[in-house]
Length: 349
Image (tube, rainbow, N blue to C red; front, side, top):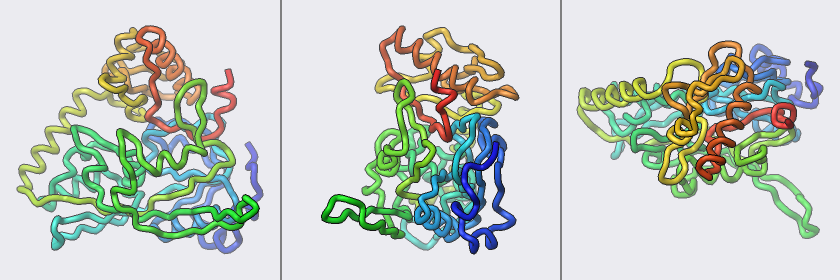
């Protein structure tokens, strides 16, 4: 596949020089995703701190270049056809603990691994994030998606997030006159959290479409309107052994109920008053395979890549699960994962 955009139209000369060693063309994305599937990005650029992330995003906004932010690669399914435009690989991972504040807090850049931050807190005898110890995604992804487990979620820990936000100014003629970019501190109330949802996620709805039924897809030509740079989380003082014991308990539970192997995490959101995994299992779909992809026999809301699976294989299983559950139980399941890239071929049939 040849890149769909000329370099000088995507990234200006100054950035090409500054990021020369961290800028790749026609870069396969499978190695950067938890499911180990996904075609190439026209351009892949790696950022290593929040200022670099802000710089790249502002330049891409200014040029009108479509882009996607990719963190830990969990909860996403990248199309076999790849991603047109730019994928920004977020490796901004700086973390600082404030043990003197009341309550104690942790400041973390959006590319930091959430589970690693939780484990660092435990080492400092700081609790409150025990529920997050096994989460494979990044802080930024957790902020946007209101990640949660074991009765905890981001809404219960977030104090504020530093957001790079673009707002369009409309002139008297009703046309867009200018775009204003600002770095803002959003307190948790402004995120308007709900189950696996936030104002940030809902605000990106224009960059997503339904593919035969509810689901999220970042389409070619789209740009997110807001990007998480930093999050500040509330912690609590505790006994180190007690924090570690609770964390170990959750990790044991996670390992006993969730399958090993390459997957995206939970595929569907739990419908109100029920569980997606239970519905898929009750529909008789545990162990169903398509190519090298399988609906896990251990937990039916996890779809496993056994090595060599394609995004199209996984998409086929998604369609089978969604259709069978709708037929048998009248429940229209909504994807928890996000579809990234060009899905016209995979979803067109």
